[in-house]
Image (tube, rainbow, N blue to C red; front, side):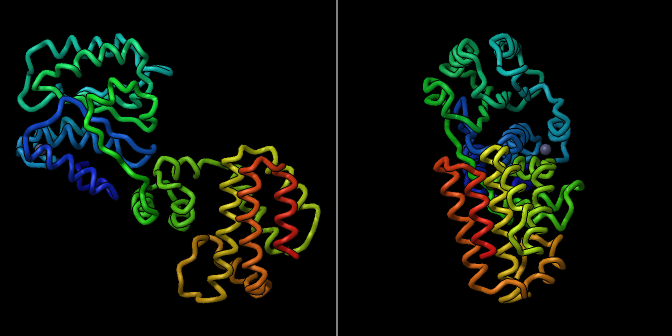
Length: 323
Ligand SMILES: [Zn+2]
């Protein structure tokens, strides 16, 4: 892995590579952005480039230094992660003690502090001392998806590099490379991922969401007011808002796909694993019904955000879809 393997973060990576080329690095960076968008990969790739024997602006992946960084087994690289809920002062002290020793190898020491918002106040203060006067052979990279929780004294010592949510196309490309992601689910998962690979992978494990997805398509096939609507509304009522939000999105994507299949079947659908079932029911829905349905789901989203009872909102939504 090197900078080239990180998709969708060109701006941030360019900034880092410019710093490497200039050879004048600040003592500390803060890689900030949502979870699952490549921040930690970028931090490791950064350490790799700074220690690569080829001295380029990206790791070569072949020299002994790059290979050892891949194995996370290089004396110049240290990665600190929370032990339990926090990063404690003794974890930082251990690093600082090591910084006092002579370096075994040329290159640059890189400390990656992952989930840096979990530093305890004591640990943050201890780290601050080294950030105030960083040794020239050290670069600290704080990685955080909740940077607003970091003390401002720390943030002000860092060059902040922002990582953005990934576009769906990049999420799709990353998921396609993974063995455990069914290809036909890639478009759906990318659309539901909110720009985060870790969120996308988490969704695949959410059995409830996939069970409810089956119930949704079943309702759309039956297209009638029945007890199933009340049962479904009751079940959704017991779910967290974030799960309901995902289920509303799934409902919209089904309606959208039916609409697309009616308009232009050559256009890519989101629910590729359900394509045959959707083709079977597309003629049961008029354009007007589909537009009304999509609007009903959008309205439900706002009502649930505004704390109206999920059960009532979802019941009303299905009644409008089938009206
Ligand atoms: Zn190398």
